[in-house]
Image (cartoon, rainbow, N blue to C red; front, side, top):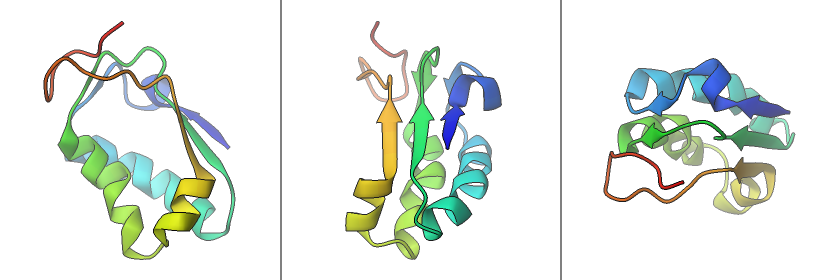
Amino acid sequence: MKLTIKDRIGPRCIIKEDGQKIYDEIHGLLKNGETVTLDFNGVSQFASPFFNFAIGQLLKDIPEADLRRLLQIEHLKRNRQNGCRARH
């Protein structure tokens, strides 16, 4: 399954509530061994609270090796400084 983050959240992925929405959508799929791709094309800002809730809490019950194998990340650019705009 491929999720386009901009379509689900918008161009700013900053708050934990938005991260929770992504977690809720992908957790069951990953637990069932399905591959999930998160596409960050068009996302211009991101911060750790979003990622802590979207991805970090997956490690509670999905082994890291499985998560690395099943979760794919696309178009995520390194940001200039924490919580600021993504580099294009």
